[in-house]
Image (cartoon, rainbow, N blue to C red; front, side, top):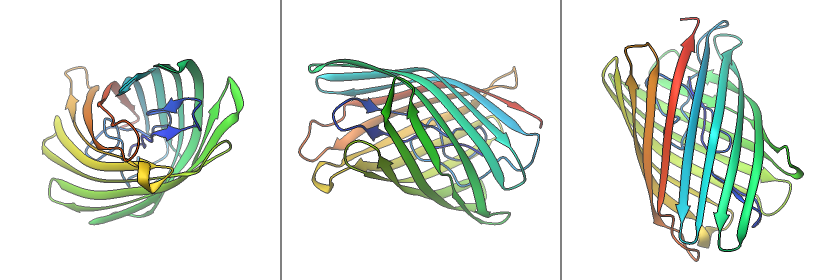
Length: 245
């Protein structure tokens, strides 16, 4: 039921933080976290729309993505089509940069309906302003569901057209005490080189509103960044609307 948020670095040109998200609503990971969950929406005619903004800070660098418009549409009980469009603005000591990003993809739930879920969610990331700055995202998600808890892993490869390819991995958990509240937490690592991996944690909440929409809020902190300056903070704020049940 969601999408993935992936940090991708484009060989010194700009850092895409939260550029290609595959979000969703209800009770697993995905925005406001960086990791994606392993569940499709569950049927044709179901859809989710998220309008969001993200921020990412490192010493001497600030990036803001917004608006981020994220659409997920169910094609079958196990396959979703996804599309994310966002504007990314980078401000740093080395100068400023902007990107207009478009990320189409799919989520295919290979296993589900019980306590275990497994999905793949390949996607393309395109910079409308720079045709040579694209990437292919190849993540896999697996999770275990027990009661109102979910424990999962999201790992994948990011093949860039310019610069080094990257890998990303996240381990997440969610707790849903009521239908109107889900608490989320994760540990994540993203890097093109093992000695310069960004590692950190994020926490978030998925809050039901009286309007039947959901408020998605998240905050993260860098724990280590190898040979480069450590990430200071990551923040996410979004509003999600579900359609078709």
